[in-house]
Image 1: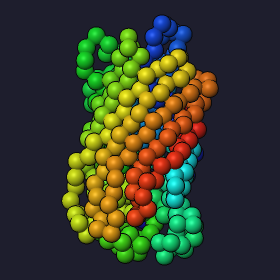
Image 2: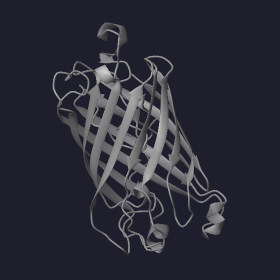
Image 3: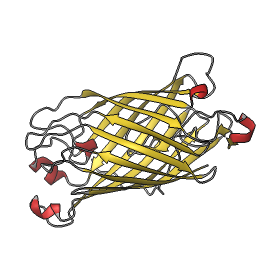
Amino acid sequence: MKLPVATALAWALITPLAITGASAAELQTGGKLLLTGGVSALEGGAGGGLATWGVIAGNETRDGIGGKVHATFIDVSDYTLRAYGGAVGFHDRVELSATRQDFDTGPTGAKLGLGKGFTFKQTILGAKLRVLGDAVYDQDRWLPQVAIGAQYKTNDQGDIVHAVGGQHDSGVDYYVAATKLLLNQSLVLSGAVRATKANQTGLLGFGGDKSDRYKAQFEGSAGVLLSKRLVVGGEYRSKPSNLGFAKEDDWMDLFAAYAINKTVSVTAAYVDLGDIATFRNQRGLYVSLQAGF
């Protein structure tokens, strides 16, 4: 089934983090503390760059409606990825997101027999529900903020997906994510378990000649706030390997996110995406411009 491409401005913001030595009143923006809205994850919901978190998009608390937009660019050895979209958070409880991804094979497309500049396009529609905890304000207990969610993904290159061994050109990921801010340590920790069939997060379809079953995968983030505006950290995301023609590696990054002001931020990262479609050692730059309200 194909869905029309969502018209979403690019969205998000900077990674949620601990705030030390400043009062809540000094750092509030739209009800939430500065830097506690998370960046927009690659698939559109609030989180880290590569990993989904348990936080809800936007700067508003339970008293309002907030949101984020983002524009993201990844340039690795043989491919580029452009993503843009947005998310809306309702009363810090429910999040709805939409993202469009363009995976450009560039000159590598000719080597793969697809043609120079051949581009896979994917639309992702997400929903997330916070079920317990508060990542920021539950400082007197170890309980993290926990959310459950689902992401519907549809790819526009069904014929190519089937030709390389993919079983489906659309699919749904399900996940549970937990995020904890440790204010005294200026530290954020987040982890998620994702049930997925996606090949390269869905850009090469879902399921394959090796496996067409859901598999549980882990994604996690850790970051440290160096100042009220700057956070640095790293992420890890495991991936299934369903296609016989090419193995699929786990993803990693090292990131820095800077809040230009209470609304706009920029995230930059060094990413290691491993092997993609027989081309090895896909490493390079991740940049995301984000705005939240």
